[in-house]
Length: 76
Image (cartoon, rainbow, N blue to C red; front, side, top):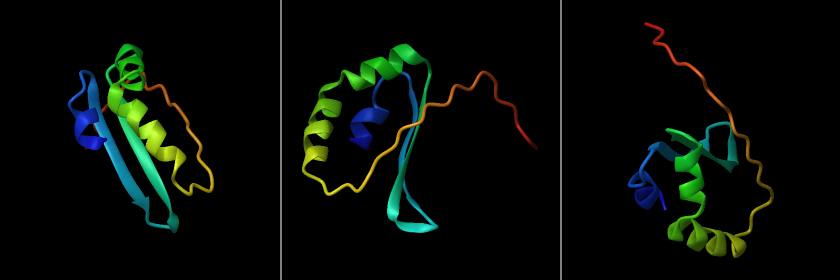
């Protein structure tokens, strides 16, 4: 999933990361150029395959938040 997603047009970051404060939690961070690129990701074959795989996993819960960033500047 990660390799295929990183190859998609408009994908800047796609990272699964364990939560250092909770052994039962995995975070997913994504960064996309725009909504069009994200929409194409959701419509991709590998995303559809992941959704099917996900149904068989023992997930306690999932939450999704979308943050819109309109500017970025370096701190140092």
